[in-house]
Image 1: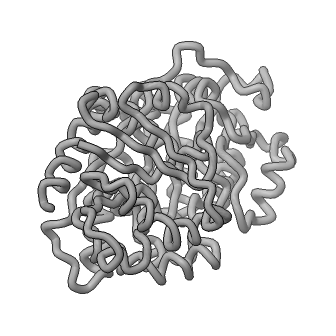
Image 2: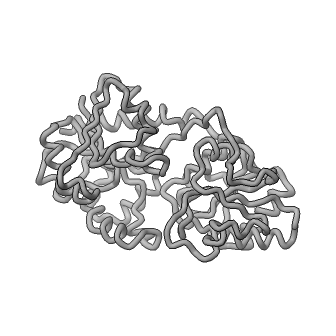
Image 3: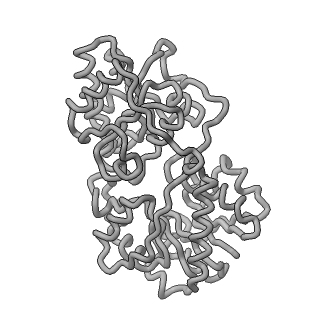
Length: 370
């Protein structure tokens, strides 16, 4: 069977979409060596995924047409032509949108990932153009796909609620896997060596991660206990950064025990998980929330926002309303004085090998629909 894959997430290295696709694809290619996997992209793919590209059943096509100048023009103007020229058994759309009028332009069956429907349930978390563009095509894409791979039941429920006429039988839930921590973990160079005990928060610096509330809560807890461990926030720079997060990025909060680790490598990130006293995950909205599982891999307590996705994947965790400063401050103080609750994580269930087996079953079933 030939699978045609929109490989645009692999243009960059390390962000959420890239980690998801690379993990799934690496495991799936090994799981089904008898399948031909053809990756298409308007730009060159990152060398960090060379292990995938070197597999004998993987082919890469970099399209250099005039449509390749931007992702949207390539998707809508060029991809249907490539699909018809290559004639795969199945097209796997990995970035939650299909070309406009896909059904009228090709008869090749298609399976599509949808990690969230933020344009409709959390539009304030998106940049203006991305929000408008996604709202224009997301519902059409969901209705046109032969099967939609939802990142969670929460996402599936959101689709059912916001996309009138969708066929529930076409919506499958496929959780992500978790990267295996690198053996050679190391402390981030940007973290002072005298920071020995710390709480951890992980995520891109953007409004939906709600770091402002977490910082205010930590400051409040520290007023009651100056011996509180440090708070380390690790993640990539984002957009619409608040004045408080600008101070964080400029390392102007360190005297108050708050430190920023920008864009940590996997070796640094997993060192942080391994050495943190606990993870605090204060998001207003999430498609999934992998850092919670990555912290549990190292048997760390996790304190989570009381939002649907966290209730779904970790129902036994300790929760706090996202904007409740006093609630987060309580857990900072509690964790300093207590060991905290450590949830059991079935590591095998959360591997990409396990999830890729499910993915291949979905791909095979969708291809047979034709």
